[in-house]
Image (cartoon, rainbow, N blue to C red; front, side, top):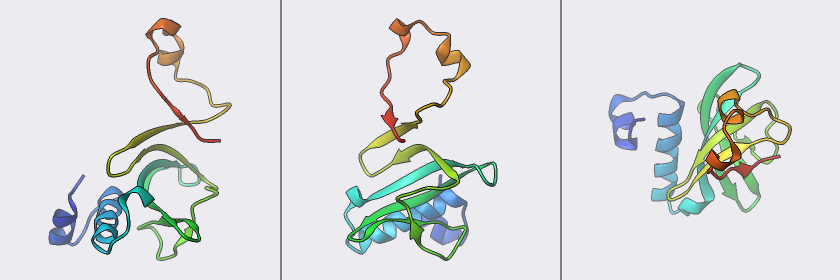
Length: 121
């Protein structure tokens, strides 16, 4: 992943680079870091991995995505499945009710499964 400065210097980047750049620009504009999350996800419609910036506003959650110039509602993702999220000081792993566990994880005895998941229905 590139830093905001590297993305600006190159004048290009991938989805993670743009999300990081947007996060840094919003922080510089005074938006609280706790209101922003870099979300790594699986785009189910495109069958591809992607990333965008999720921002909590007074009106609700909005998505800033380099794939569109539209700002859209982030409260109800339709065809995306978040996998990991990052804020300035926190990280989340998303899990889903009814989702099948990884075969490798399922084969481990319960005593060896020591991790925390954030459930996202």
